[in-house]
Amino acid sequence: MDFNAFREKMVLRQLVDRGIKDQRVISAFLKVPRHLFVEEALRERAYGDYPLPIGMNQTISQPYMVALMCELLELKGNEKVLEIGTGSGYETAILAELAERVFSIERIDSLMQTSRSVLDSLKYNNVVTKVADGTYGWREESPFDGIVVTAASPKIPTRLLSQLAVNRHLVIPKGDAFSQMLYKITKTDKGFDTKDITGCVFVKLIGKDGWEN
Image: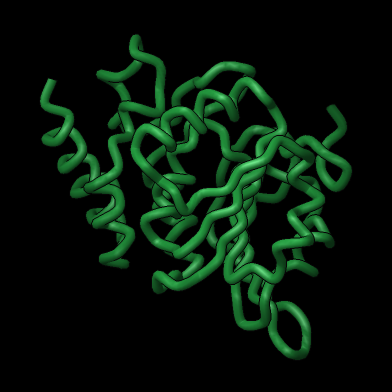
């Protein structure tokens, strides 16, 4: 299969045609081989306009949603970013193309082992990972120049807000199990500026400041 052609078609029709404008995001999506982040039986569907299962009741998100979340971080290339929910590792790889360093936390060890293997094979040496409750963040590495949460929380985890640098952004879906809103939260000298972006559906963020397991 010509995965390069599928990837180019995905970027044009699913991202550019829907308003993704950040050229660095577009370039990252053209480069990262999404099909390597799903199991072999699903690779011919890897560039489709939908999420796919990756095991353990988790998914690799729809390409557009990944692109939108990454664009909302407004990365220039010299940042340190925190990702909550490594999952397949695909969004981690995109972030690794956009930022100087990526710190990514996954709750499920087996998913982390698989995603880490793919990231290592693609030589993303600027990614640091650990298995932990992502709602605690990664305090010893804070503050971060961007934080992205790839699962939906019933509330905004306060620990993550405290680990965000001033004038930087936290992107997170919030809501119940069936109806959620994607938010962009900007930390300012005076507090937090919150913007609702779009409706969405993500798996639940399990953890101390998320949903109970």
